[in-house]
Image (cartoon, rainbow, N blue to C red):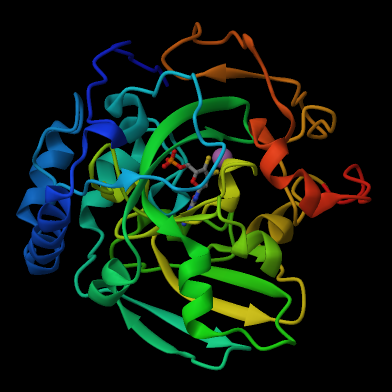
Length: 327
Ligand SMILES: Nc1nc2c(c(=O)[nH]1)N[C@H]1C(S)=C(S)[C@@H](COP(=O)(O)O)O[C@H]1N2
Ligand SMILES: [Mo]
């Protein structure tokens, strides 16, 4: 499989260019999105799927994030690469499968069920989730365990806002994330690489960390389906697979969840999966990475940073832990 890159062409608005008018725009965007029924807009954008955000998906601007330490110098990955080189095994294991097949995913209506050890369990409609906190734009590094990385301007808000709202009980220690599994629309479910649905998990304090993002958009528009529409997790200091796409349930538990990747290959994928250049995958080094659109097809030029560069913000979460053991 070849990666075609167009190198430049990044021109979405920076947080600083976004004015308070965007509050109006955002509301309008929300309504448009909620109103998308046959999702024709999604499929035509899907078919093009290539250049810049084409303007065919509903705009979803975000205000400059208030979370500190987010300014990074890295150049954002082109929209084309970010939307055509994907891992979304529900649609197949090739990098271009999600862009080809995810158009079939039905995202309206959508709701997320909040379950387990919380005072306020229940189903939250997407429309309500969109209004739960102000949308922020956050440019995060994303590093896949396979050794490539991207830089993506996400739009969303801290998962902590949702967690506060549902009021976890004192006994809640972990959060499990369950994603959509629909054999009608997801050809990948025929394969048994993963015990579907795709399940991920975090410790409660990791889930509450301000960097942990509940994302609804990217590049100033709603998420394309191949990137996890209508909402996904983004945990920037962990390997990409911790960031579950197309979430349908969030469950608070007192036991460490058994995630899909732990089930399928426990020696290779641990619960924590923090980006760590000092702990190699059993089959390959994690010391460096290839930035999509920047490096040659097979060369890895960048040194991988501890916690993907977010050590100042998240290092404390792991103080005293042996990260070789808790990989
Ligand atoms: N539901 C679901 N979520 C998923 C995956 C998946 O296969 N299914 N793949 C993960 C992996 S391995 C990566 S690297 C990221 C990729 O996100 P992106 O395609 O938006 O860059 O999504 C993660 N979330
Ligand atoms: Mo990944």
